[in-house]
Amino acid sequence: MKRGGIDIGSRFVKYAVINGSGAMSFYKKETGHNPLSVCRQLINSDKPDILTATGYGRCLMEVSDDTQTITEIKAVARGAKEVFPSCRTVIDIGGQDTKVISLRAEGGVGAFEMNDRCAAGTGRFMEIMAKVLGYSISNFGMDSRSDNAHSISINSMCTVFAESEVITLINKGVEREHIARSVHMSVAQKVIAMAKRIEVNEAIVFAGGCANNRTLVGILEAYFQKPVFIHESSEMLAALGAALYE
Image (cartoon, rainbow, N blue to C red):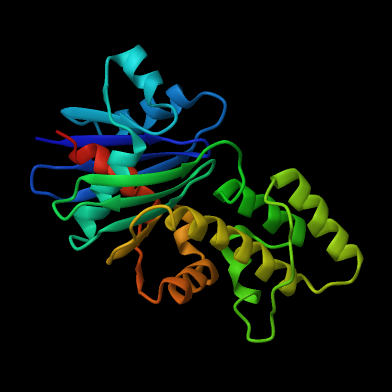
């Protein structure tokens, strides 16, 4: 039996398919202005026998196609546990929210903290800051990893105000690698503040597209004094967890 999981996020739709032998296939497209159409394109490219939806737009599938749904908290926890069986904590920085999830030993969700009130400290925040500083999102963390890069204060985590602060620093002649380091520190501190409100145990798994940012990973590892594990398709873990849902 082929199982599918679709994660309808604010920036991308991610689709995971598990066939009868256990082999996994992953697909991803920008959400755009018509997420339901994108979902159907992905599903039709590799049709499952059973489909489960998660993410912000999961209700679209539930209403239109009578698809079963699961919250993204449960989905990403299940996906992280599948690829890292020792996982006890999940950090998930998505396009519009940030989650820190504590797992029980058997894999169920014990507790979680979630920031979904604004884009502060999210993937979208990182995209905007990278653009202002003239980086591609894939290269954003490179300069700020330098030993010569130091952190300066960015006081606001509101995306609009932080962007203004960054522009002001640029106009003052502050080198962009120093500003980039500060942006990364701000995002990491947001995650750390959330983590302090729940129990963080090993192993820690970083999910979502921001897990590809090595500077952010390094800051978190330095704080927790523990390794942070990253799957090669870190942004697909919620879709995978949905596909595994029963």
